[in-house]
Image: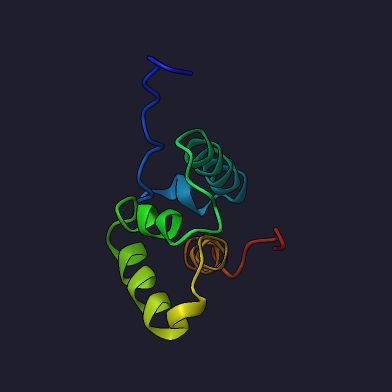
Length: 97
């Protein structure tokens, strides 16, 4: 895909109600995964986790920082997506993880 510029997925904003919708969040996670793969970034790498740091804002960024402190060397892209899911999706949601 040389010569094709693909913009990075949007930044999640926990103040926007659309981020509280499980389907919207799942679609965003899938888009991030595809985008990272197309950029040659392995999802298991620390680089993928570091990329997410630049995508999150507000409470999601605080959640990211807390996750890194809590998990230290065990933190990964996948573990943070679970934590972010728990942060963004209300506990009253009927959708299950």
